[in-house]
Image (tube, rainbow, N blue to C red; front, side):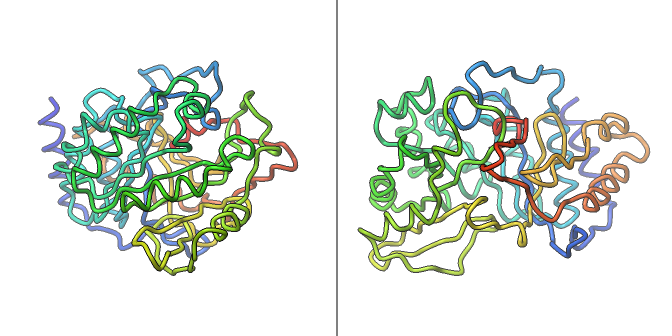
Length: 351
């Protein structure tokens, strides 16, 4: 059945004339799709989910076949970068099928993954062979006790082993992502940069986003801005702003004595909405048009109302995606001062 589905999807996609770009009401071209394949994770990071998280029933998740179908349609519509996220994407059963099929698509220039690295000793080589170009690894601390506190259940040595496995596999880029919280890990930013530099990796520092209600900390009190991190780092390093990017929201700085770049993702202090080129597909099949708002399109309903092989399947999905551009908002409404949050957690949104 899997093989039949794939053959039908490929044949149908070959008949479709590609649209040059998906463009929203504000003239922004959408070329980047982030796909969450699960809201589950083998860690429980304090900024990502609550300690009593209720996960989506498995029957409500997109099937792997539906994920591939939607991904192919986006590529046909001009998307050239897909990132697979979670939760922890590598905990999803048979997930390599998604990477193997998407990795063969003409027009997809960048197939990437965001992971906590706990499964990379098992999967790194397979991901590379499937066509994954870059790997982003979440690492907020290099202190074992803090790692366990931030992740609630994690073992630092497993993530470090996964990082080593990714570096050995030969990906184009292996990058670290670090969420920085005041009085929790903000004093480690130089240590984290040293860790990345010593391994020839890039690192991006991320301001915590107010997604979901967390009971572990007060976000307004633990907020540590990109500007504060940059000031801390400049006490040790010469950092020169660059115009480089990888198609995402990060602003990058280069160090004259290293090939490693330092990036900042700053939804609060340096809003990047005016250049937003991305949309997100949740594990349940909701197409989120903005990380910080609830504007969405239910693509699971579309693909299940028009199953693969049925009349109008591809056209219905294409039309739904094109029409969704009309509800992509100009920007998010993140504001820590009001204590208002988006109710969905980061693991549900797609990290």
